[in-house]
Image (cartoon, rainbow, N blue to C red; front, side, top):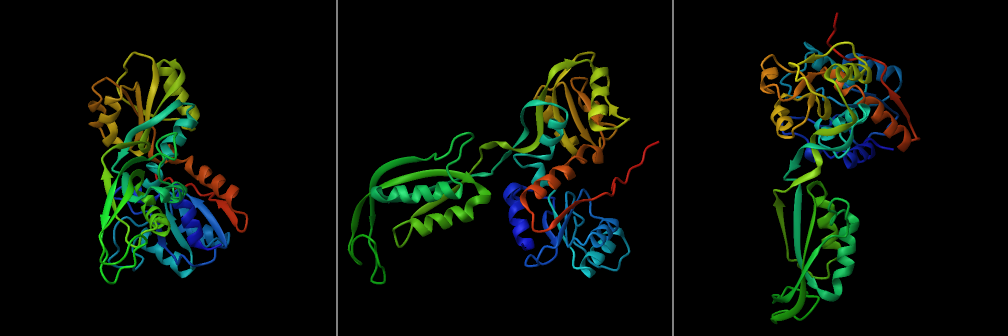
Amino acid sequence: MLIKDIVSFLENLFPTYYSEEFDNTGLLVGNPDTKVQGVLITLDTLESIVDEAIQKKCNLIISYHPILFSPLKKINEEDYVERTITKAIQHNIAIYAIHTALDNAENSISDLLATQLGLSNLQKLIPKKNVIKKLTFYIPKNKKEKVLHSLYEAGAGKVGNYDNCSFQNKGIGSFKGNANSNPTIGKPNELQLEKEVQIHITYLAHKEKQILKALFENHPYEEVAYEVIGLENSYPLMGMGTIGTLAQPLSEKKFLSYLKEKIGISYLRYSSSLKKNIQKIAVVCGSGSTAINYALRANVDAFLTADLKYHDFFKVNQKVLLVDIGHYESEQFIKSKLYHLFSKKFSTFAVHLSKINTNPVNYI
């Protein structure tokens, strides 16, 4: 098993194509053709995590947060980033970061926290836009089934809970090859009119390479006439944040106590009392202040996130209970999820869950 095989597995589940523009996801350090000896799962990659990987004989670290956000102009071990990268390279340890690829995935980190809180009827708070593309191509009617089957197999034609979705129009196609052509139908330098079907089919943007490959390999024509356009439609199964509901409404006081119990913390920051019950809840793990307006528009009773500033608590205008549960605390459950995913999928190498608490914040 090579590192690139692990990368393929991860990016099938959490495509880096949908990472936020500010982010730095994917294989940050290491050679993808290196054989995997062991994997260490962590929330952050620090020097201590690299030391743990060395001790446990792991040459691949799967990290939620990327150690590299900005380009390095020097590596002289002056700060923790440079020291961590240097040590990883010295010991041939690769580092892969997931971060917002997971935040925007169908089974996202916010979905995980929502499930931990016992929420149901989950949906995305901010559905991702510009992730759906449409392929249009033209083909003889009696050749369409083979091509359509190959496209469905490659991941095209899925809409929500439906698959094998496409639309077809009948028409007449015209073409005339030059002297160097080798047409499937007709002869070079002769105008050909052919009964064809125009087929429209949609797909998620990260699958484009494999879908076009299936089209070209299975289409009978020497030159395939096709069009690809991006759609502005939101994709409801992918995006930032999660909305869900509690089975039963709770008073604010009981809800805050419930949060502390479920997340395993003894502290919370929250906005002014609404004096109403809490049942519909929005969650954005990590820094989620930019999603406050989305929570307001969704008419939730409470919005859970982290890294809120003083003035953020005014923004809810006493319409939503705004709760800061802590950055690390909101993301802490992802390590176990990744560990179980890897342990279930791979058996040819050891998978370890980091024992180090990388939370840089302390409370008294």
